[in-house]
Amino acid sequence: MQAVDPSEAQLAIARMRRGTHGARFLQGDAMALPFERQRFDAAVMALVIFFVPDPAKGTAEMARVVRPGGLVAAYAWDVLGGGFPFDPIWQETRAAGVAPLLPPNPSAGGIEALRGLWTAAGLEAHRGR
Image (cartoon, rainbow, N blue to C red; front, side, top):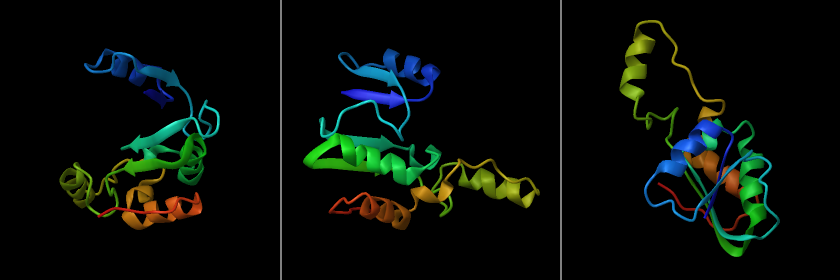
């Protein structure tokens, strides 16, 4: 397993987690993965896609590094659709006149946005709720 994150602090925490023996953690950019084409059987973006400055480029990079027939997957909170764990707190802060800080691309977590990203990357199948 290989993992990429732009934050060395996040990588340091990941390296200390149980069950990561043998995993390789690299500092890098989801929009320019440091791997050759078709290297992996799967690529997964976990709760990250709305933080990627260009989600389409990040999705295309995952597709680039996965072998034909492999799996490219993401899961995300629907930040704008009420599916974010802090949504009740955000509702109260909005009611108090304070706008919550949002990730760079909050709409990328919605299922239709994800389907669009996968289609644009040339991926064949889409699943989601």
